Amino acid sequence: MARSAPFRPKTGSWPLFFCLLLAALWSAASAGTAAAVSSPPASFADLAEKLEPTVVNIYTTQTIKIPSSPHDFFFNEPDQIPEMFRHFGMPGMPDHAFPREQTRTSLGSGVITTADGYIITNNHMVEGADEINIKLADAEEYQAKVIGRDPKTDLALLKIAPKHPLQFATFGDSDQLRVGDWVIAIGNPFGFEQTVTAGIVSGKGRVIGGGPYDNFIQTDASINPGNSGGPLFNMDGKMVGVNTAIYSRGGGNIGIGFAIPVNMVRGIMQQLKEHGKVVRGWLGVMVQQVTPELAEQFGLDRPIGALVAGVSPNSPGAAAGLKPGDVIIQFGNAQITQMNMLPAQVAQTSPGAKVKITFIRNGKRMQTTATVQELREKETAGGHGKAKEELGLAVQDLTPEMARSLGIGQTTGVLVAEVEPGSPAAESGLRPGDLILEVNRRKVDDVAAFRETMGRVASGRTVLFLIKRDANTLFVAMRKK
Image (tube, rainbow, N blue to C red; front, side, top):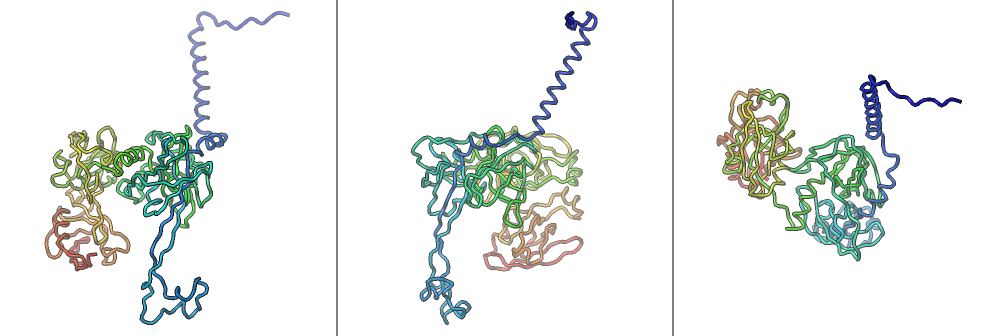
């Protein structure tokens, strides 16, 4: 039987043959890549088994003083108190006359970051704790000491003295995360140890009101009470975040959890380890989000960047020539696509560093250089320019561009940006968008004048505001805390 001759393209058809071959190979590679990207992993078991030893359970105890009822002298347990005594105290004796101590316990998670026992967790897990106990995945237990805490980012660094080198988590690059990437969370939800959940990155750069440096990763990986301080890993087994909060109406997971990006964690942890505290940079500008309406007013083709609403006198921003109305779009090597990105970038910059800033002024792209200073208390690194006053309101300077955008007929004054629910400002009827013209019958043209005047008002005294709302002016009075 005759053998089939191998296929040999004719000499003239070689270019066409190679083109078809390359197209087929490219199509196969593309299909494989698409399948790899779109298909979930067959199992998370190997990854979970590898990473579980890096995660610890944290048990804290805190002694608190609570008002003690005089019934405690006569009855050992609350259910022994007769009904008549549960509703009425002893005549002439306040219930808080005899404070007693009570022990409160908390459960949470943490992640080992070095072989010699440095552990990162949430600040709210250990703040005020009298004793912190760490339980490893192999059930070994240790007492931990606090190396440093940073309430502004809700991070804390702990240290234990292990009997042997520990397996620790490797840091990834949270900037490389994309919405839709697979991630897994490991922690101690509701006391169930070493619980593994999986999901995807649902969003980045989320602002949830947790602090001045909000820049959270959002995930639908199940996160519940007790997951606080635990790690979020990518599919390479590298830590990309520290789980810290959930959005929930009932206290359980509804698919919206938040993690602190590991790129922020890395710098905070290093400073806590070296100094026991965090030193942040300060630029001295107050910024706000660029809305589509503001983008049009400031000559931008889309809402991007951080709009400078005010510049503190004698600040690095003032020295660099920044002015209200400038839109910062780049700080150093970081592109500023959203307002909340700038405070975090400034905060992470070492004091004394010279940083190039790219901004847009009157539709023109410009550059300047600022020498970042150290952030002092009651200043904001970047910042939002909405530091809550004693009355529960946040204010910012009114600029001519903002006045045009909001339809305000004047170009000076102090604009109410936020009103905290339940605060004196809220109870007095003050609203966001109100324009403060006077404080205690003194004219205030900007935030600096507003704060100077407010500083003269003693706590407990009444403050009188003259405000403009739409086309009307009215007086509003409230008591300063």
